[in-house]
Length: 198
Image 1: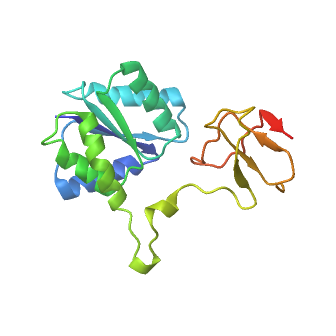
Image 2: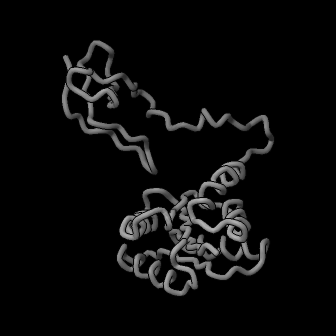
């Protein structure tokens, strides 16, 4: 059976584990690991490793993490890279539908990768708005530029074809391009210009 680590900032992972077990029943080889304010990244990493050491099955481990880019995710990512292969897998955006689905899927699926792929649609489907008239299409959920900024294609002569650039200035102003532009996750950051086209 695939082992599961629930990881979060604060006690969120512990609470969601208890909620999941209230609904689905007690689970073996499931541990919650919390990051507290006084802990550093190495302390959190040590707690994750200690949790894994308690599992009967350590080869297939699924990590359900609260937030992409936070300390829990970053430390777990390093552990996954060190472990190698696809036996340890992390899924972010942890919510209760995701946890319950993982508890159920581990009874019939024997790989962390398989469970990760199966729980993502359930986790997304668990995010809904009532009344339904207030809901928005998934396409509208894509990250949008800050107000006043416009995204324009990079000059091919100076930037790669996949790069994009952002400029809050009129179209007649020289456009600065970057090697890459990453959407905000979890915070917006303005890209640093690497070259400018007249």
